[in-house]
Length: 80
Image (cartoon, rainbow, N blue to C red; front, side, top):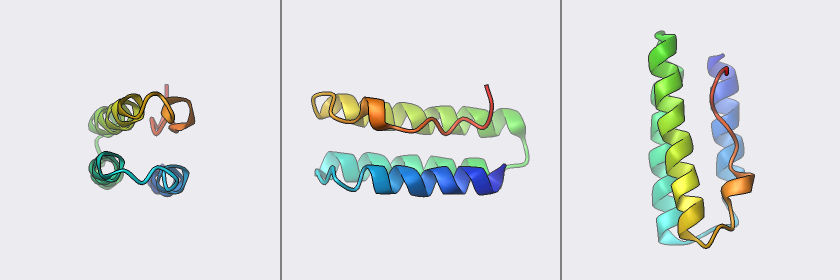
């Protein structure tokens, strides 16, 4: 599960590479940090919560750039 989270974080980084605004870069760094914390925890509830926060940060960043990225933002949640 941790490998999947790390892989999704890398994919998110690549998918947002085309968006190079300072806001996008800051949001991606914050989301990456949250995803890393999620990958490092052994508590599944905490992992889900951190991944949800990362998703929200990425979605908010997408909305900030006129909706150019929300549909492209991957869901990093480990399970539904």
